[in-house]
Image (cartoon, rainbow, N blue to C red):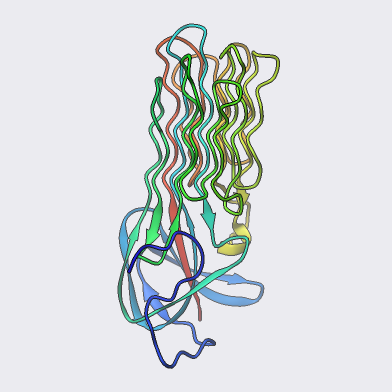
Length: 291
């Protein structure tokens, strides 16, 4: 069976499925949560693992791909854009899938490495077997005479651009947003797009664009406080680095860019000769079932 990149796909053909029955599984880090008065077991996967289904049935799933790396500078007068967030699948509308008893592979997408020259620093998709993919985030804008933000894969947010008119686009804005626009003279990069909002444009040719906001997923995972993920990185700039989006990291005016720290978020851009943008953060996968 080929991979399906977004949405609901049954794992197999079956003649009788009681759609009211949730299954039981183990794997990752297990915790007990309550959402809207309903008790669940939540399985959280931060690294590659297996989901072992002991009882066939329905499972709610949420995935985020690895965030894109930020861009840096090839000369003392160049800045890079912020990395875009990985696509967040299963949050806006709960994605429920049917799984038969057995073992299902969980693949966690790596974050993209920050760059200082032309190249795609996009993150990597996350998967649950061959069922659903959350796309990797767009790479940060590179810093050269033909700098550009790179598009996210299959719905990831776009990376911020280091050159006017070269914005990294989200392939499907149901799952992410576009990156921001950079300056024409390359001294300020755009912010990377986040799941909740687009990356900001540079301002005045010396202030980087803000990273797009991430999403608070606390209501889905039953957390008692905010848990923001999938944010865009701020753009690098000569005077003022782009502000961090909610859950993200800011752009810088010198040195190595800030590395993203929350799942699926993009790295920050930076400014100056030989500098490298920050790394994007790895993705994550959550599986929950009613108890």
